[in-house]
Length: 84
Image (cartoon, rainbow, N blue to C red; front, side, top):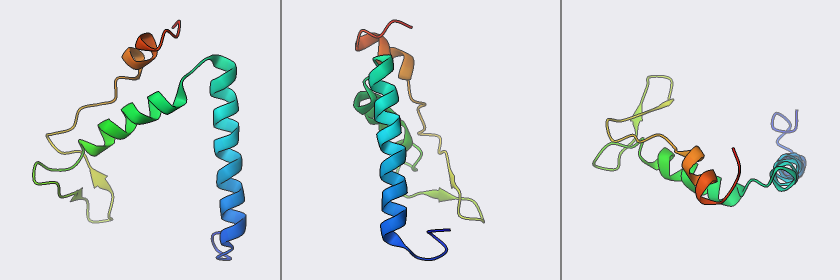
């Protein structure tokens, strides 16, 4: 509703609530979310083609290139000392 109404303040508030909930959950479970986000971001950046351009489907969805390397969240958590 807030997006449809172009109410940027309400959208920002809702986004902040989602992030607040995520960080509270990660804290309670001992998950280093900043480190996990860095790994997921690294993987997402490998979706681009070798020339750095996105590969888009007709509807605009970003497709994975042959450069894609999936996020290795389990290894990141192990490195951070989180018991799996």
